[in-house]
Length: 166
Image (tube, rainbow, N blue to C red; front, side, top):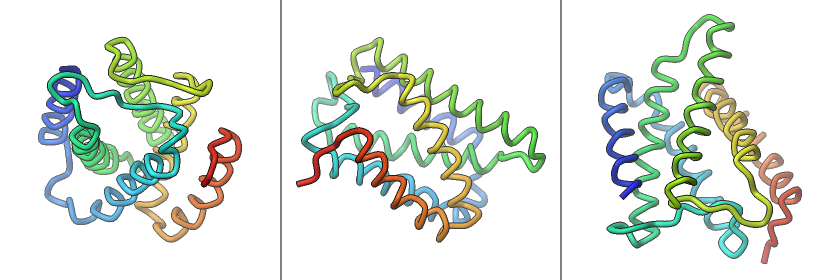
């Protein structure tokens, strides 16, 4: 039930505050965000650090992934669509989004919708959120650079988190 409420709220936020007039500008970054999420699920299939645990009535992981796609698209449309031009405000904007994602994950943990394994913590998720929002902005401004930097960063994270590659 928490997923339905959460996805509904993210959908509403995306509709209200997302930059839908210019959605085409953000299309590639939305796909990049979704690709990174799907790549995590594929690479860490047998050694997931965090898992979205579907609850009633959404018992299937594929349905939950669809919800994540809605949340991530809404995130990009709001985060990038309202990104401040001033460097000082852009830092605060990014930190606000890290706080939003961390608080969202904390609520999902409290409701049992999200679980951690292999020593993963909310603190580590917060650090990943910092990287995530920096890379979303980087991808929007310089997509090729973001993709090139994503590969060694992913390899480093796989190594540091001891995710077995088969």
